[in-house]
Picture 1 (cartoon, rainbow, N blue to C red):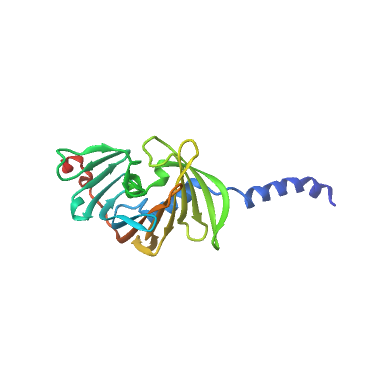
Picture 2 (spheres, rainbow, N blue to C red):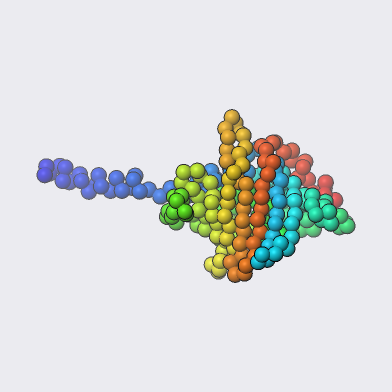
Length: 246
């Protein structure tokens, strides 16, 4: 072998390894996947139907109307009638609950249960990239779909979960599975996502979440969130004014 080629070979192999097997930009993957749940858009409105089950028994059903941006969201309960008018407001890192009969909104945590296995933050959050630091954790196949696996760590104490393991489809760029962990590393819940909805933004048709099924890690209980009537729409900042909830 030519001496110059022999000397250059290790460097060429190193370059090939670094370029061919470089880890993906985990934060960029996370930000891209957020769009299919409303992140990175000027605003979005949609409806959510929640059905919670304990074993085979339906324990609770709710329907909500939601409007959101990256920094804020407002969810209002439409059904059942006994809960109609209840509102959940999230602005940056803070959340409040208002309902008929309360003299003023009360501060709440995104970790509190909204319905069944769905936490307040599950209803409101669309921006994982803003709340979590992502690190690549390899690739796995779910069913017949290749996925990037990311480990997400909370950037602050106001997130819904301390840690998330997140599977993002290599082909579609959307999150298809999540596992939610406590700070100690205990598995709390898991979720699967479907994307049978589409939205239009900047002359593009973007897949949008149609269903999120959340399962408790320890007991036979779960909540299905069905998303409908999703539409990209600029939402005025005044919609998220805490004074409007007084």
